[in-house]
Image 1: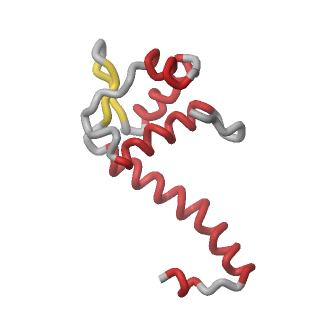
Image 2: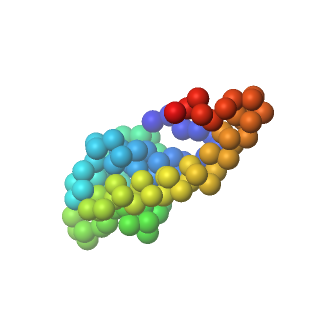
Length: 111
C-alpha cells in the first residue's frame, strides 16, 4: 500500500477497507485480516491498524467477535455508500461546480 503523506495512515487504511467493501472484495459477515496480519502485509505498526479497526467498528462498518476476529457488518456497504456520498456532496462537488463555473463549462454537457 502506498501512503499519502497528507492524510493519516489509519484513515487511509479505513478508506482502503471501505473501498474493498464497495468493490465487493469484502462481503458481509466475511472475516477480515487480524490486526497483526494486516499490519505485516502493508508494513504498518499493528497499533495503527487497531486504530483503523476501532474507527470502522465505531462507524458500524465492521464488528468484533471476541477471540475470533473482525468481520464486515451485514449493512457495511450501505453505511459506506451513505458516508461517501455525503462526503462527496459536501466537500468535493462544490469544488467541481466552482471549477466548472470558472471554466465556463455548462453542467448540461454532463448528461
